[in-house]
Image (tube, rainbow, N blue to C red; front, top):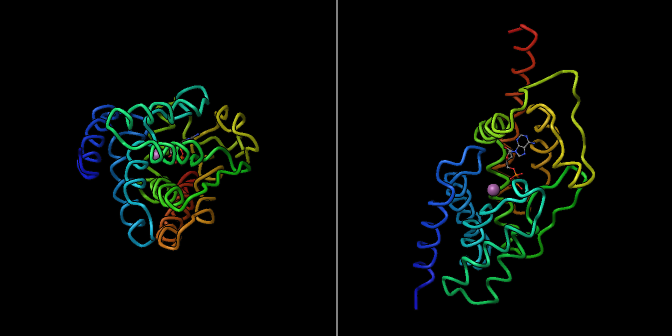
Length: 218
Ligand code: ADP
Ligand code: NI
């Protein structure tokens, strides 16, 4: 029998091999940061850290956005990896439930996770979407998709369905209004709320400078 720590190590290595070098901001180092942040937040809460760590490692293994909006692929791939490594069925079910419910799917779409473990990983993932890293990832994603940086003639859209959200092709700056600036008020845990505050302020300052530079004011 492998210890939980060994299982985590082996799965981390597998995820690293699969996501190394990915170019849309969902690469191994995103997973690494979410994993470390989930450990940090999880320690402040009374959580099952095995579930938290496995979910953090596997949450983007097959992202729905890259599978035509099919949100069943991610849990399926995760489930296969977990059973290949002898993880007990009840833990697999829990991890997969979190993976299928945690993603952001539009400003007007609910994405509530049921368990504390899910709330911890969702917070960790969302913290990596905001702040300085959030800015970098967002432009990386926009470039990956061939989007414009900004176009003042295209206004942000508050998507009310996941279908509308995934179809959105607006300029990258719009994503700040369609998602990133909304995350601060959607954090679950106190630790994440605190961290989100500083990252939110930084993004606001960034956007303020962006629009001033756009008009040649500074
Ligand atoms: P989450 O992991 O928060 O459920 P995603 O995987 O959709 O959400 O998003 C992770 C990051 O990918 C976003 O925070 C952003 O940096 C980038 N991203 C996703 N969709 C877009 C988009 N339409 N435009 C620009 N960046 C995006
Ligand atoms: Ni993620």
